[in-house]
Length: 474
Image 1 (cartoon, rainbow, N blue to C red):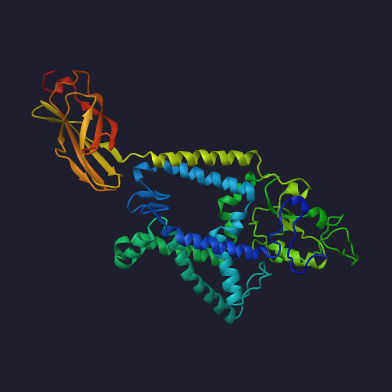
Image 2: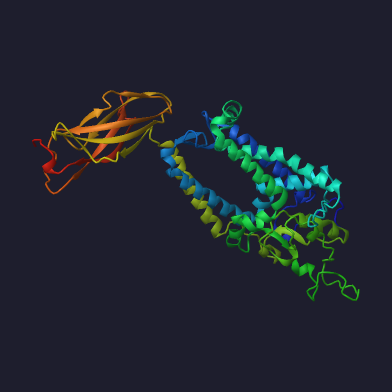
């Protein structure tokens, strides 16, 4: 007999221990939701060396990753981080199917909070085992409760949208701007309000349809699955009768014991995605496994194993679970390589960033053609943890003189300075009567107190006019 306190049972072929067999999946999901929520709320407040674990700040044009601050000029790392995130999703999908959708996705968490807690527990508008049944709002008490549910959801969604923004605006700065300078950052707070309103509409009205029709992950998941990927599966071989029906009674009322499915439809009524798991893997399924929770008590009363479980097709067919298959190794290898590149880049960064832009004017003639000037705009960022005095020099092209800036300048730790650079020459660098000539050279910026270690060099060009425009000697 099945133990009376057990909700589900894993097959021996699955190789998975029944360490959670006494707890329904929905309770485990709620604990996972709580864990993810606490993690998401705390993460923006965690700092390493004064920097956040993750922050993409558009206000200060900087990027924080695991306590390392990157300037926007170092955004070449962003594509690597995006690739890393995508490959990690591929790996997680190969190992666990769509467990993220049902167990960690904020959309699912918010929807579960609204449907199962606010509407069911607090207001009594729903029944837990009848998620597919639409709400009946024909009477004023039900309509009032529905509006009350949206009012209860509203502050939670404003908090959730603020939590999302904290990964783009540090939470301390967010609250400071909200309390002291909201009129100066109308776009930020308008976006906060619009995001909250979108979440309210999405959670209260669109619901699981977002997962089915909008979320791109639902569309790509099928190409990431194989026969070894664990998913929510109905055991068709055990459940269906020999004639393909799913009830132990045929149309004449005669009992047919060839299949274990009783046709109670408990798995269908409880499904938040409104699908029939018995029809096989479907795009709308979010792997919440509430269908398994619904089937377990029915099978328990019949002293039989659960017909719906989280396992793979190969395991269901009696083969051994194979998690470490080639595609898993490929994804893991890519993750290790990209992580190593990011770690190396973070440990071998330049302490000075230099960005060079020329002005729209090619050159400027001075002293009736006896000298030529080229103008540049430099953006210098001191990434070191202390202030330095910097100066500018040129290399690889003789005869150039820096007219501006004339003196060294100070850049604070983490500071950014914009400088206009004017380079002049009174020598005939090239005698070309055919037209203007572009001469390559190097602009070097360095700290006067440590020029060998704190410096940055970038190539540029000096535009020299045709021989007929200048009056200078070689």
